Length: 515
Image (cartoon, rainbow, N blue to C red):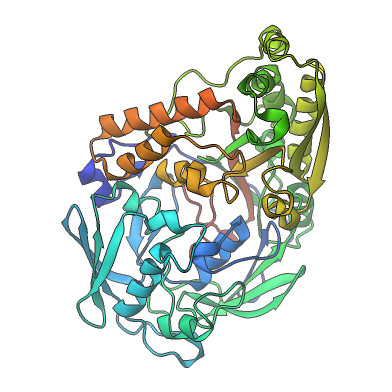
C-alpha cells in the first residue's frame, strides 16, 4: 500500500493514498436484501462496545454504527476522512484543534442534545487512571478538552499528536458517549449502552443469532441508506462464504485462502473487492514462560518456521510476507520481505541453548486458514525437536486466554491484529504497560517504550520513520515475534448493495447503499 508524503500539512488535509481495489461484478445471485434491510456477517457476538474497552472486529463494526464521532474515514482507495458529527474542525496550533458539533444531534432514550461536554467526557475517559481502560493509550498525549459552548470545544494535547487524524479521531477512539447516561450506569458498560447518538441504534440483540439495528431519528449527520441492518455472527469465514452464496446474507468478508479462487471465478450476481490490509499475522512467544526465557530458544523457533510455506499453504499466495508489524507504505516499513527458513541456524541455536527439544503449545482461533498455518508450524518445529500441540478455540474463549492462563501458563499464540493507517496504533500494544493485556509476549524494552511516545509527537516524516525502524529492530532482537503476513482483506457483496470499503478492506456499513 502506498501513501502520500505524510507531513503535517498532509495530516491536516486528510489525504493519504492507497492502491486501487479489484472490483468484479456479474449477475444472477439470490438477494438477501429486501425491504431496506442490509444483512452482513460479523465474526461473532459483540463483547464490549464501550470504546475504551472494545476488543474485536464485531465490536468495532457495531460501534461505528451506534456511536457518533467527529470525523470518519470514507470508503475508496485513498485514505481520507470526512466530517460526520462535526460541523467543522479547525487546527489552531500543533496542540490545539477546535471542533463544532452539528446542530440537532440527540441521544437515544431521552437524554437530550449531544454537547461539547459529552465530547470532553468521552475523550478524557481514556486518560482517567480510575477507569484503567485497556485502550487508554489511544489518547495518551491528551491534556484536556476545553468546552467553549454547547457545540464547540478545543482538543488540547500535551505535545504535537501526529496520529490523531489517522488512528484516533476517525478510528476507534473518536466516539462520542453521553456523559449523563454513562455516569448513570456507574461510568462504563459492556454491550448495553445507556444512550447512543450514531446513525443507527440497537433495536434488538439475539445472541448467537443476530444484532438488529435501526435508523436513529436523532442523527443529523450524513444520511444512512438502509432502514435496518442485521449483523449476523458466523465464526468461520468459509461458512460465511457458503451463507453468502446461498443468499442468506448480502455482504461478507472472505477467507484469505479463498481470494485466488474468487478472483478467478467471481460468483454470479456478486462484486468482489480486494484491498491490501495493514493488518498483521504473527506467532507470539511469551518470553516470561519458563520454556522460552532463553532468547536463543525463541530465535530458534523463528528460524525454524517456514513462512513461505505458510504463505502458500494457508494463504494460497494471496498474502504478503511480513518483515515486521508495519505494512508497506507506512512509516517504519522495512524492505526485503519475510525472512527465509534457516533450519540449520535453528538447530545450532537449540544446541547452544542446551535444548534437544520439548513439548510446546500454541493457541489459535478455530478458523480453517489459521489452523492450517499452525499445522505448518507444527511440522516445522518438529524438525528441531519441539512437539507442538495446537489448542484451538472460539473467538470469545481465545481473547480471554491471557487472563485465564496468565504469564506463567500462556506459551505461544498465533493471531491477527488490526492496523489503521498510522503505526502508533499498533506499537502501543507492545508497551511494557500492556503486558498481559494486549501484549501476550510480555515483551518489555525501555528504549522501545520511549521511542513510541517520541514518535507520537514527531512531525518530521524522516525522523518518525527512523524511530519506527529502530522499534522494529528491537522487537526482532527480542525473538518474541515471528512475523508472518499482511493478509488481503477481501469481501463479497451482492449486486443489490453498493458497499463502502476503506482502503484497508474494512467495511463502513453506515455508508452502504442499495443499488
